[in-house]
Image (cartoon, rainbow, N blue to C red; front, side, top):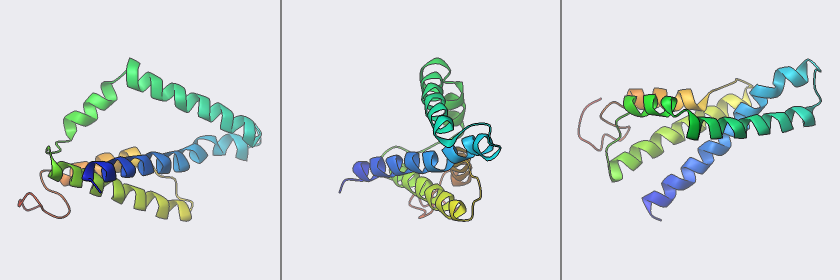
Length: 130
C-alpha cells in the first residue's frame, strides 16, 4: 500500500477521533445540566461544527497559517512518516484518554507533537539527533 494512501487513512481516523472526543465535550454541559435534550444538542453541535469548518477554512485562515509557520515537515517520504507518527500518537492518546473520561484536544496534541519533532522524527530517519 502506498504511503500516501496510508497517510490519507490516518488523516480520516484522526478526524473521526477528533469528532468522537470533541462533540461530547461541546454538548456535555448542555445535556448534563438538562438545558437541552441530547438530540437537539447534537443537532446544534453538528450545525455549528460544520459552520466552524467553513469559517476557518475559507474566511479566517490565520490559525492554519500560524500553525503551518510553526511546523517544518520535510517533503517526501520522511515528511509523510513524520506526519503519520504524529497523528498516530495523537489518536492513541485521545482514545486512551476517552476510556478514562478525560477531555482532550487533538489539535493541541498534534501541534505539541510537531513542536517536539523539530527537525527529526520518532524513527530518526533524518539522521539528526533529537
